[in-house]
Length: 119
Picture 1 (tube, helix red, strand yellow):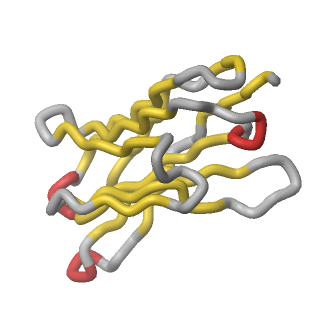
Picture 2 (cartoon, rainbow, N blue to C red; picture 1 turned 30 degrees about the horizontal axis):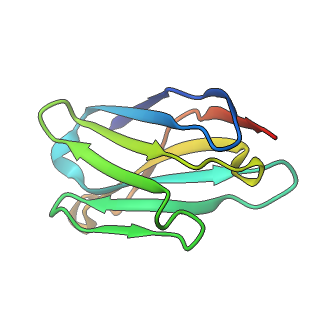
């Protein structure tokens, strides 16, 4: 099993910055990628950014140029640095981790952290 704990959410003004953290614990060896998703009220959960344990990153179009995902393997932590925040970035942000197929391909989720951007 893998446990994910997010932190760093809060209230920020439009144009401001915020850095989210996701600390993973448990059977980290089972994982091959971690990601940030977000869900705004009344909307479906959507992918924001992914980082593989090989170092590759992928971003949603809405995040490109403004958000940066990174991973500190020594701390088993993934970060999402967000800048140029907009009101439409307001959402609950969830950390997600993918396990290798050999371990069932299970997806693990954190409890979420609220990000509110005021205009």
